[in-house]
Length: 333
Ligand code: PBG
Image (cartoon, rainbow, N blue to C red; front, side):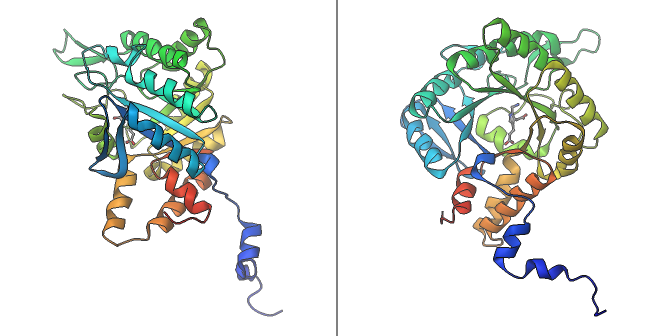
């Protein structure tokens, strides 16, 4: 027999054959595009550390939504950058808050777009933590109070559902948030609204540009008492297990790029749809290198997103969504 015995290159010979044997298919339907909404008029302000991503005031939001729809992306994730912050994050669950207004407006402009609402308090609290903070008398340190925070997160989720959100995505990492929000939604008559749980969210340096964008950096301490240690993976199973038991409809791993092993593991262990969050610094690093002419942005982005899908993601939240969607259609951006 001729050597080599196995010729893997036979299936790589032409674009047609490569297409037939391709195992992972990336499509615009996989993507969710995050958008930052703020107060004021005529605001379309680029976030310095996230080129191509902007803050929009309500009056400039419609043009962005039209562009999202035109790109082929079918879903957006809305973040609010509020005017008013206080210790209890009251703008987060204000029926007329910035996110609630944006949800209503987006629904009216593009009823077919799937609206995901991020449910957290950190953009809305003056201390920048994801829940209520109290002074622990024993240690004298400030702690984020789990159970008190749940109540406010439930109010936030219900107000988002009331405004018309299709999916509630709690990102706060309090224990029991899925159960609390599920019960709250059910009691308020929103039993059909799904929960996309940020189940496995690490305390990551990769959120830096987002915190600039959302003005949500903690004013003291860090998030290590509620977000996960990047060194842990068995703990990811425990987190996902409790979210499944509490009624989550989808599970998320965040960030994505440095945690592809976690995505793969969750894919093997759970049968709920799995979401990867391609977070802000993952985006910023690509944009910075591309701006310097050091990398081929299109190639890097499509390869990265394909890698996330191959690792196990069914859905990818990404700031590259509009560009990637256009590239997949063969358009230049
Ligand atoms: C809110 C939230 C954060 C991100 C999404 N939701 C920031 C954080 O936890 O500090 C980060 C997203 C990104 O970096 O793109 N809790």
